[in-house]
Image (cartoon, rainbow, N blue to C red; front, side, top):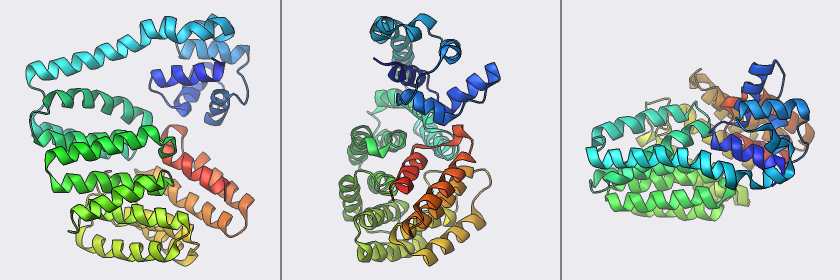
Length: 368
């Protein structure tokens, strides 16, 4: 194992982002380390020197010799992490699961309240934070699945959990989206069945990843029920993004128009939840879709409409809108200008606020 892989695994085992790792080193040692430089370590573009090896040793709580010595690195994860890190995490999760079973676990209403909280937190917290928290909830809720309503709860938790993995990874995100769809089917709750499929479709379509799966899940959602709902709205826009990326502009535009009609009937007033699609968020969907279609007039109008109502507490979504402008520049032929614009927008956002989706969007701009 090279040192980049080890740094990545240790960081993930502690549930912190690259940005957070850089921040902790900066706070402790007064340095100006960036998230991008940490990414460079993990991708083996460059290796940390003696100073940063010592800093990593302290922040990641791993013996310095492990970071300095290739032979010790090779055996560390099995000989040390396997005996120290993994069982601690597993012990906590197993304990939570058995406690839930022995004590009955949270009520259905309590679970719904948890979901509402996670839906709000997802909008501002990083993927690593949400992933760590939701994984524990999944262990707990699976002990209560003899209560039919909790299949619906678990399906929505699984959908949120799936979104903490990059869609381009394919296997992990898609696995959890499919599991969520099956769990929703077990619940018999039509709204949940449509919602989890629609949410998966828009996540994958927006990210430009696993487009075949996005299409299948969107089609399933639309076949289950054509009643206007947020799940149907998400499904339509997920399929529209997949069509735009494939170059099928006519289908994408027809779906965009259909989605607007569904929004008129089902749009939500809740502003800051992942389970909601208010006016500003619809326009975020449209902004990227129009940018992908090369429709600058629609894209700019959507960006302006989104900014007028976007809550100030959600700077990540303002960054999305700026990066859509970078994509438009790149698609119009000014690739270097578009990349620079999108990179500046992303760099202006604190690293701990970066999301997997933003990173995939940056990659899309760079590949234009």
